[in-house]
Image (cartoon, rainbow, N blue to C red):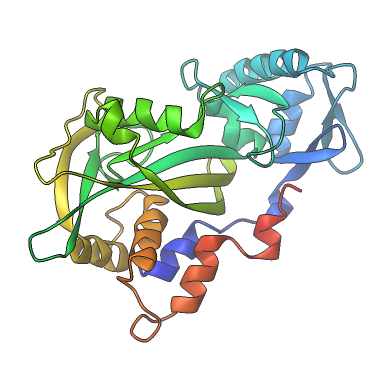
Length: 292
């Protein structure tokens, strides 16, 4: 694997396998034929010539959210999704857009709708001036990427919280970072990718933050989702991204982005530097307009 290989892996999909999903004339997702079949068992979903829509009589946030609750139960029973507790995501195509509905995060892939998350690079400056990254090792019980390396803090964005509120919550749960320190995290970038996997289509957006940590800070997990934390020099973290599959698939992109912004990769010595930066920034017309 290489930096660019990981970016390509997170942007591998074939829309010929999917049918578009619309709400009020706006394309919000993509579904496979087997998901379409399950959704059509509800009178709220209607087949069209090219895809599926929600009946216009379900015109409010509450009505659409109710439909998605029912859809989640049917999709789980059909073995096409896994319910993710009671955590709800906001259905919208851009962060600034009004929320169209709430849905259980476990059906995001099946519906091919956009999900948002926050990722925090917890780093420190070593005595010699080099950077080091606190890196989580995902618990072996995790359904996704068990045992893989992760950012110090990362989590999906639930409905009803601001990004910073979610960051503070996740930072405490995952790494025992207290509110005053978590608030000092700096928003630094936004990474988008579109990936097809067994669950469906994932047109996801990661809001990235850098959090410079005191020299004596050592993260400790409080929610059981991280088995341990290890401190990796930035060079070692980059080596693992460039040469291995040690990191969770999308975290490779966050670490690469950190390296670009901190000048740890440069265009004179890094093969495919331009393609790497373009891939991280999501400037591809197809990717940026997928749900527009």
